[in-house]
Image 1 (cartoon, rainbow, N blue to C red):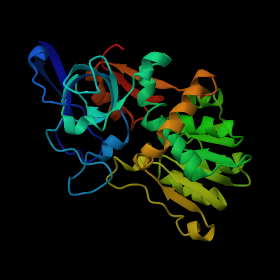
Image 2 (image 1 turned 30 degrees about the vertical axis):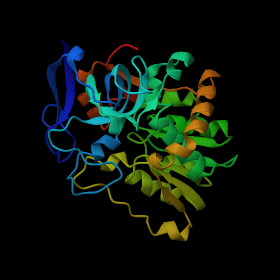
Image 3 (image 1 turned 180 degrees about the vertical axis):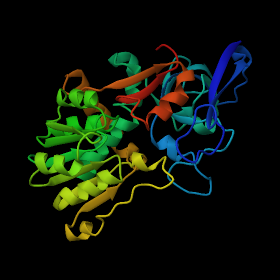
Length: 347
């Protein structure tokens, strides 16, 4: 018998979710030896789980459709993670294999055959000897999001000026370093001076704290001729400033709008009329649309850059599944620094 703690979605949050009220923990016992697996099923033990902003967007009314399904009240939450197979009735996924993908936020989970096909083997983690947390970060969905948004939609050219909002986050920090490697002038915005100091040591040419300085003044000073690329992670006032400081024919890679997720009255954007006037190319994208076509190229290139020391990745690692609710909520209050990950068990 083992303890099995899971994270449960309890109630629709009107704004910022509250731990215990909207997201709660439930614990039961599991008899692993007597778990019955149908042909093709597996039993997994979670090793690392990923706290990502898009999970907040799943806490909505089910009638509101989006690319990711809404959580149902009482459901065990799920998201990206890496797990090890502890029991198997599958021909490919055997005991001891690492798997990656969307998995339940629980210490142990029974995965039916119909869902196993959506998971990926990640046994290269043993060979490459990189931190397992990287496979839900720089080598997982956030890293691939940065890669796709930057190369496919930002269309970088050497000498361009790029502004990355939420620059110390899981996606932003990777975008900035990729941009520097391609010869761009890289500006980042953060909400904490410590985060800014870290970015200046890791590829960014300039960083400003949007909480303690005026965005318009900072962008006028740092990009006097305007920005060629804006990598959008925040929305609201940031998007307004980006439009105001964009050059003609600027490219905007619209990755996310974290400032809008927990507000009953989101910040308005006033400069929308300048988008056609400046002929701004604004592309919204979801990385899920590109995973099959870009996965091998992305993994090969990013792994080499990490091993060669050409790219670094800041993580916020919490220990124990009990920390997942507060880690997820902390994404929206600057309580985390870097990619937020929960280590459930040792590698």
